[in-house]
Length: 353
Ligand SMILES: *Cc1c(COP(=O)(O)O)cnc(C)c1O
Image 1 (cartoon, rainbow, N blue to C red):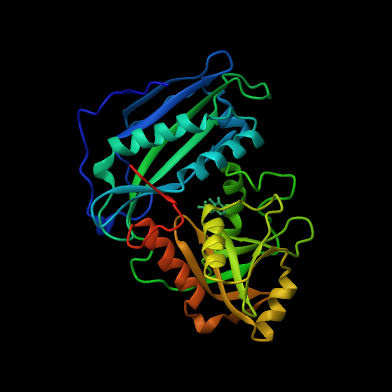
Image 2: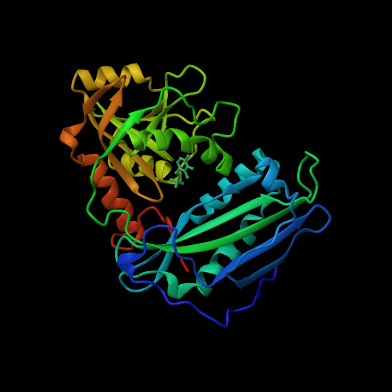
């Protein structure tokens, strides 16, 4: 598919790298592709960044037909730009699309769109270690009718936002509250799909935790409310009695690319890694017997986020003296090293632009 490029005549200026934050600024352009059942994907174009217009009955506004991805473009010390396992994001977007009755993308074409777009927005990839150009591919149903069915029209877009370092003030372990009321998703639901609806439904618990001084919640499964699933919008890992334990992908957990990468790095380093059910009782027992050495979230935004305190049933437990653990630090060093091109990419994960 040919991508028609209309460049902006009023390019913006990149804010100072130290003031970027997350998701506040957007680049000069955006990529848009239309879909309809008769023509398939067509009219791929990159146009100046700006508002889009939707029919008031557009499916996405009423029935939440929306999925997205999140990945980063990194600048190496030599000044090159690279992506981290981008095909994994495209494959996951198709898994999400299938779940939400949205059309699938051709992997090769989607890769080409991503590359073409990043290349055009090259100057927006910041230079300092820890900063990146955050890429947000997304897709939504766009039928102009209130009927409920598999969409006949959809739109795929990519926007990008230069982002600051997640750890400007160093890696500080966070306080997490185990959530007992709300659930994020259920098996058979949309937990494994990266869809906007999951976020809308899980914001409330995060806000409530925030009011109590916690930075996020630890989700339990929606059926038995017993098994640990994720932390906020990150996957979660624990080091219990020398072994790394992470919840298995039961269908209600998002299959994170950072999660997958952590598992591969840990196995290569010789750690025992188990993907299995982990009950909150087992976790509490491990804490009480002094066998929980480390706990951390993992995801593209933070890479890893150590958990320093865990609140359950009104009791707060301190983990690893509220310090980042050895395994967590190692994963951070290896993954960020590969992403920002500071260490050898022995896994073949990065793709140069
Ligand atoms: C995106 C996401 C993750 C992390 O996935 P990565 O591919 O590692 O960024 C974890 N949990 C949820 C709910 C997510 O939406």
